[in-house]
Length: 201
Image 1: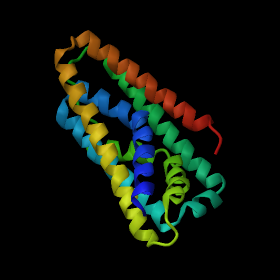
Image 2: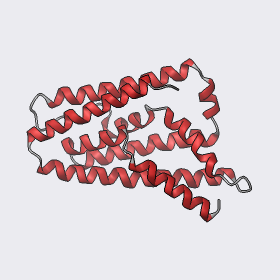
Image 3: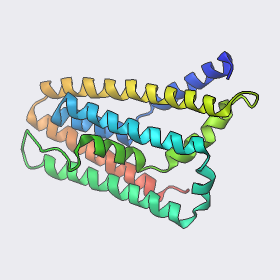
Image 4: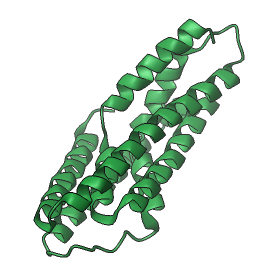
């Protein structure tokens, strides 16, 4: 991959990272309610999910996923249901008035990984995105590895910044405002799940 091509890829990654998705909403909500460590564990879990997606895309299984037909739709609906369930749980727990809420079963790391993996469109996105920047004359595997690590680095820096900023903001917020933010975040997760459920494959 030439430097010019890699520079174009960096710009594309930056644009993608600027638009927050369900994982960012989850990281912000947990950082505000549970502190920096919870948010950073979500970030680590998201990185595991992202690495899995990139690895599958790099191996070239996106065509297999596309050929799965209705099974792909079931996977998409399962991911959507998980996001809606997380959002509803945030909204419901925030109304109880507690300031310290217990963490999710399986821990924040597992939760971050599940949310990252809950959108199989990410896999197809990388499968379509990577080829645009691959130099056919060079080692494909090495180029995919470089692009994958770059995407993960961008996501890690961005998500960690959200976690740190949100945990600091959370310490300055009153309990009522934390509950309001939790309800809003839960609403965003439910909206993301609905979008995933009703969007076309």
